Length: 527
Image (tube, rainbow, N blue to C red; front, side):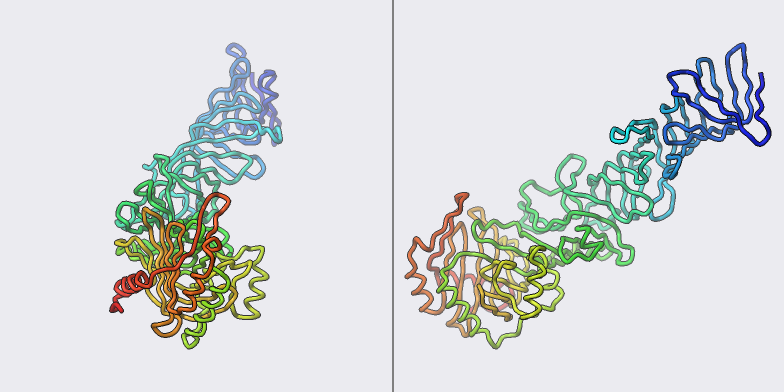
């Protein structure tokens, strides 16, 4: 039996099998084998299943008894029927009903390079959206390392691919690896779960893991075994005891213009937000630049120290330089603070003014300011041009610029040049002071040394802190006498969680030892 549709039209073929939900399609001609119950339909443009469209090869469809459609080979799929987000070639499909089919095929993914990359899709089918109750089509596949598949230029991917007809972005769930060629940097696979399309310009990540499910870091790390610092660009820590000094979470991409891999806070990178951590690495030169908030991996208990700014280094020689702003908050008698800040201001009055317009300071200061207080802080700062302790910067001493380097022998950061003191308590200092600061690790407790000159060699202040005990001594006898006069009970504080802090008279000999050690590290003659 032969069927021919009138010229210029098509005939509709609809299944009467109740399990096929009135599956239908159009064709221009057909023949029906009444003996074997086989229907051959010709010139079938497409068959709609769920919200997608299947295009038979050569337009031929064969339907057997009980409306069983033969497998379609070399077919094509477009999904969905309206937006046509996704297209599949070399499809092998079995159609079971209006909302049911299974298939395999090849999907061509296009990224920003506009070069198609083929993905083998081994599972295509229909799912029901629980929220809308509508039927949609899914497609699942896998990508292995042999394909050298790139999500973006210089970012490889391996793992699972998930596509749905009602969403344009494709889910890539697995591992990414940066195309890093410098032998000093080990490129490793790190976990991602991203939805990307042809216009995507970055890959997102957050606290990634390697394939062994060990945490990975994009940032700067302290090596607990060697006492070195090392740059980690999506690497697992060398040891579980290593400490993160700086972490960049957010997005990663390769900047063709600057020839750098860029990783970190999306709002800062894309929208020029003033705060956020960003790590940049140039694979050709080995240069690394990090900017944002840092914790230096130190625990000072009830003495609060915060640092933010920039780190520059080179993976080829690994000698990081930290240019940071640094705030220290600790308890000290008000009369002692008043005497100290007055003495330090007077003793350094002729020193160079602190530079609040420097790039390093401008990048560091937003990290200290609560966004809710940013407007009032900026208004006050623009009005006076000075900084003092307050709600926005609740520190006892605030350094607007300190250059720090790392000494692996003493396991400490130490200042390499005179630092800029912005304020002490409510007194603006705003001077570059030829003092010294050291922040270090010890098993018995992390420690701090701070030496601030206040004029000639007889006027100075020295702080040594470790294990909850702040030792303070000055070159001015009046200060030392007032310190001793403060009742020990008033010099002691305990937090609600059981931490203790106290300040006590310190040692001038310890000050001299510290100053001479730092002068030696800086290449100067001891005093």
